[in-house]
Amino acid sequence: MPRAKGGVTTRRRHKKLLTLTKGHRATRHNLYRRARESMLHALSYAYFHRRERKGDMRRLWISRVNAASRANGLSYSQFMNALKKAGVEVNRKMLADMAVKEPQSFERLVTIARGEIQG
Image (cartoon, rainbow, N blue to C red; front, side):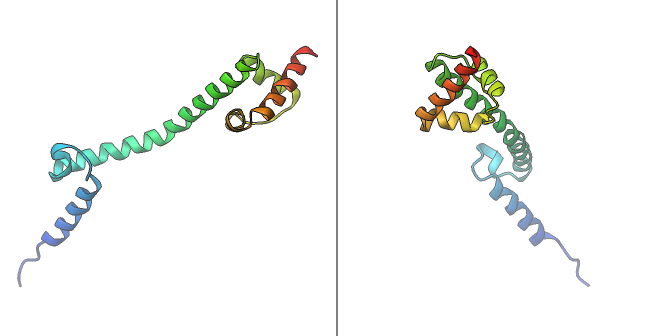
């Protein structure tokens, strides 16, 4: 009985991995061993950065809200504290969206916050 060799299976597995590393530089996209290392690093970076992106977005929202509230005469911390005291529960994502797309409604929130600070 002839010996069963795994050439077809191995080639298929290698080709699948090499397609994953298609855009990588130098030997990282055409030598199997280097491509495997590159793929493992790329996948771990992707996993880590998916979680990191959430913090990046929060920082972006905070900077947008800060810029808009300062344009209306309040610092970010004063604005957020006053909104919390007034019982307005709008998250940072929505506040940043309002600051960019609906400045009039954001100004109304600033006046509510200013009223809470004054009163």
